[in-house]
Length: 162
Image (cartoon, rainbow, N blue to C red):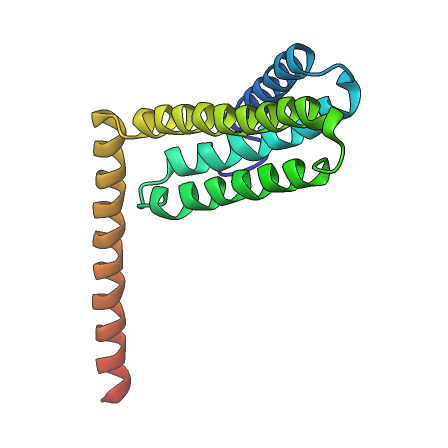
């Protein structure tokens, strides 16, 4: 993860996420919808949500998959139910509702998958042997400095107690 907003990796990552979301939303919208403008924004929002959740899941060293994937599947199920029930009275709208349902589900699922791939690739870069060695070396150096500070504080405490 980036340390600050001035880090260029942060901006490259943000640009990549937004670019993937725009492309995915545009392709699915223009293939599956007869009225593209409102559905593009819905699919763009779902794509950003999916890519972000997938990226964080893939980049995490914790077992986040067991928590995030059921939440995403529940969200897809809830969205699908809402879209299916909303147009259930109008028989002529059922193919349209079905295509909207499929496009939203496809957009969210593909973006989540893409985000998980990008996040796991990002994590693999930071798990390289060189990066791991540097991280462990820095941790050992910090432990050494902490021990020195503890010893210095103990000496000062002993002098103070005399």
